[in-house]
Amino acid sequence: MVHDPNRVLIFDTTLRDGEQAPGCSMTQSEKLRVAKALAELGVDVIEAGFPIASRGDWESVNLIAKEVQGPIIAGLARCNREDIERAWEALKDSPRPRIHVFLATSAIHRQYKLNMAKDEILRTAVEGVKIARSLCDDVEFSPEDASRTELEFLAEVVEAVVEAGATTVNIPDTVGYTVPAEFYELFTYLKKNVRGIDKVVLSVHCHDDLGMAVANSLAAVSAGARQIECTINGIGERAGNCSLEEVAMALKTRESFFGVHTGINTTRLYPTCRLVSQITGMPIPRNKAIVGENAFAHESGIHQHGMLRHHSTYEIMRPEDVGLSRTNLVLGKHSGRHAFRQRVKELGFEVEEAELNRLFEEFKALADKKKELFDGDIEALVLRAASGAEGPWKLADLSVETSATGAAVTLRLQHSDGRVIEQRMSAAGPVDAVVKAIDAATGNSVQVRKFEVHSVSVGEDAQGEALLTVEHNGRSYRGSGVSTNIIEAAARAYLEVINRIEATRATAERNGERRNVDRSAASAI
Image (tube, rainbow, N blue to C red; front, side, top):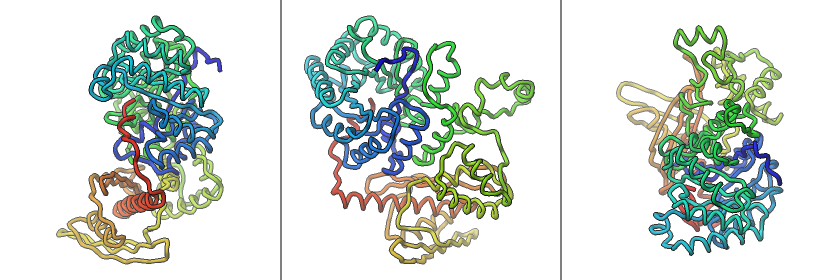
């Protein structure tokens, strides 16, 4: 395939690198939903996972390879035959598969992680690419920790893998160490000193440890990179990755400067970011560029005056460009099904008719509780329905009594096997009482690590979203719940956690699943 030299490919690794962030693990159904949203967004490549890591990872990559049309579907592998063949088995059903192999090249990694000499690194990299290429026409190679690798040796490795058949070469800033001017020079050096470099797509993958992942990625583009590896909301290990929404809008807004474009449908950015935020339980900061709540808000008088004259005085982008509506009050209790359907569509969500009918009934029930409904209320309904956290336990009823000395909670839970369990519990506060009551009713015991609450809309009767992060058997789980009653929201969030734990336990028992590779081996590419 001949690549348009003015087109920058967007390689999304939310499902691989992003999911490795603590607390961001996703179920198989959640991964598939995110992958489909990424396809609608227009990303060129979806890195679906690390198939050798576990049976669950392999199944998720295989499902996405079968179900998601349009983008290239990539799977990660170390430079050894077992990893590569396992990745290929997961990917081969995709119309557009890619095997992504990696090997560390920096002196510090050679000495302390791999205990390998330069000639061993070269030989292993070439062998890995050749094995991958014997199975798949599309092969990407990443020299891990490239930004801290000696330039001459990095060029030698890149030239060797290009000759071995790599079609994309990715240059990662694995630990977020480089700075834009330095990274520009690195890419310039490779362009000048690597024979055959024009035969491949040069890619860039930056981490945000010093807050420069987007800036470094753009510097690489200026120096000739034509693929950017990034994640939705910039999620990922440590400080995260280059943010897809930020780099996509930077290239669009400053296209006259960079002279390149992407295939991203930017009007899908906001709903996609909201979806990933809801699924991972990582709220989008109010001041987050592009999709944060304050990104298009103007409070100071001089800004408001300018905005009233012309939006371009203080806005370099329109909210509509990223799929963010300016509408505040949207619908009420007398609104019809057609108006509801239209608003859901305008917010960027595609919902099947049967699901829409169910959501409309929930909307009407919510309208009876709230005087006014806003975009955030509708988003919360749609995202909650798509959470993929269905499980055996459901909240049937809840009552709360509070006083200056404590709180008492009585709840009734319904299990999918028909059982109905009522439990009463007292504690210092109502949320603590809810957690203890659910533990007693379900027979689970977990350690709550974080509890957060924030409003999904505005007004005194706004819905509240509760976010809970817990630890169970050395693993983090998170859940979210939304309600006009914040104690009910907390109960729903905790039940989602319990359902996730039970689903994980059932999957492990069914598959006899064991982690067969240290995921940290791929954590920082």
